[in-house]
Image 1: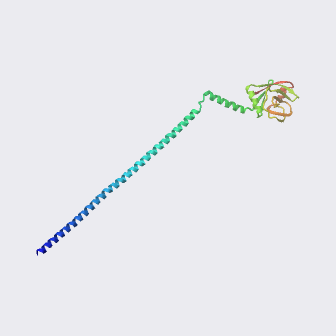
Image 2: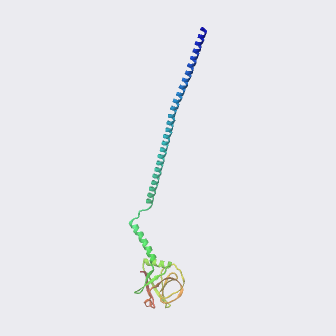
Image 3: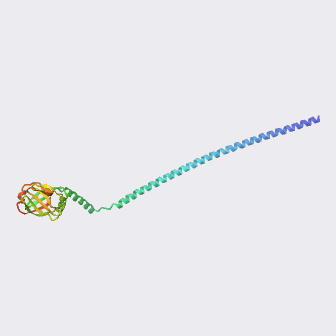
Length: 234
């Protein structure tokens, strides 16, 4: 009996120890699971914080790039404005100031050139009678007009062959000679340095200068002898 009681007591003790170990193992497992949960919950905020940090960094980088681009555009705009102002100042410096007298002189020159181009008539005075003549367009006429601008051209003319008066000009003019049959009232350049005016007709190589517009009284004014003829601008 005593042996049976002892065995039963031993078995009870063994079972109690086994139950204690099982409970201890379960408790440790629970503690490990709790620690894992705590670790996971702790790591999640860290990840969130990292994401927020990344977002903030990205935002800062975008802001920095925007500021940089703005500064670059501003610098480019300032540089362009500076170049434009510099170009304007350079043009202003290059263009000389025009004095009122210079402007008036330039306008006078232009007016004189225009008048020169517009000269189409001249006066031919024989004695006291003045006739109007229409000028040709050639280099000889241009040279003769320049002479008349300086002063009237006065020529002593002699009669030749009963159809023309001829006299020395005192200088040579450009020639563009061609075989010509003249008529009364024609004015020509002969040999480059003589003026011939006709009251009859002749065929020769001349450079035409002009023609008397109205022949009324022309032959009578020239007469049969020497005459003084004055050529001037109207």
